[in-house]
Image (cartoon, rainbow, N blue to C red):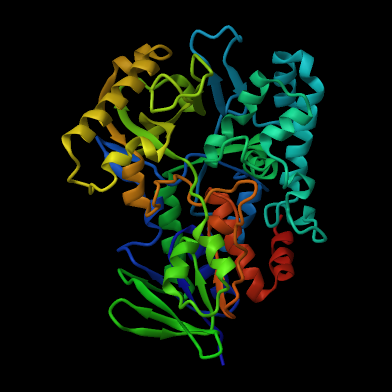
Length: 497
């Protein structure tokens, strides 16, 4: 009898899991509640731009790169075209009116990056060397990204750095506040503050960028389309516009299928859930799960939220042609409320919707706490009060004024600005707090493994791995490894040059 599997949710992790299982002979049904697969990767259009909500930049997309290996194994490499960022400056970090020196350019080369950091911070050479060596060690052991470097004897791919915070690592290696602030700027890519983020999480995210940083032509939409094309030829049955109402179990607590909201029942003894683990608990009867497991999943914190400006303009900053920009605040004090003058600003290019190689604007993101918008939490998209609209407008104007100090020509050429808040992210992502990267990965928090107590019911997605496109793909490999054998998948990846 042929093996079957139901995958709930067609994001990157769910679709990758479906494609992998189809390769290994499974009959797969992929169920998506929205009208199109990979909905959060598709972005939207604004004033002639494609606003990419899925992918800004990735590591390992060059020849023999870690991401290229995965895409090749999935049959997607020919459909996803990379655009290498400036290897000498994939990220520019600056502080307006700074006394700390010129802007710092992150290089996609460990040796060059170490040289630049030591030149800027000559008294901290040992700390710089320790930091980069630890990042390389962690990244080289992440399963499926570097299959030849996996440490199978260890429970964590992060090695000895899984139980230490990024901030704690800085303190142990006597890395000062200015260097620490610079190295921690990429915490914006995983939504956890340096005092809470495990060093291993940070290293797994930035390690690929330090080797090679890439954009993707067409961004997240190109990835979503490539995944959809692969599904169409894989034999996977894709059901869009169908919501799962319940995960069905046998009398002895094993998976036996799902019931859809229209009452249809689809049977299978293997169900992979790729959404938020809390949602999986809602769809599953209470019986099989211990109270402590339910409590842990219910207590999962969300990653940080943000305010985002989508901006069309005639003269984007030249740096955006080859990378991204981080603007540090003039003052380092932490604020209590939302003040546009504080916090780090992240700028990334936005491309014209009809010409994905031409920059026509930019996205501006700045972390934001949901509680700053709590008074309007009960309002709905399209029906917000005027007070909220006024506050949102003032935020946008304040961030643009701050940006003008560094990039007056770009600001002078702005045509239109659209502002999104944590409430916007909440409504579009389904995260209760508008977390930009889903479940937070922090010290002391239990993050679930793919297998659950229910036989045949598995989890996949960023909650079981890490945020971002690359880690979303890896999470699917981790999950599918429990069905076809982790060693089998790693052996297949090793064969790819």
